[in-house]
Image (cartoon, rainbow, N blue to C red; front, side, top):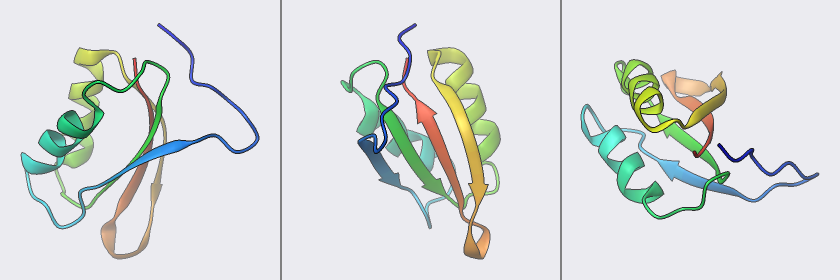
Length: 84
């Protein structure tokens, strides 16, 4: 597995799935990350209540790594993910 590139200001690919409900957030994540290089850092925003469990399951299958999760306003969760 390739490590995430760490710099002072790393380039981060952003995916906004706020307002979408299962299974659309995970489908959007899969579609938008398809073809991105291993080690790419992705910030994924979602507010679907089942989103965390679904994202953890997807990462378990693909080898992507959730670096951190932050709760923002209105129940939005911001995930930082390193692609496998």
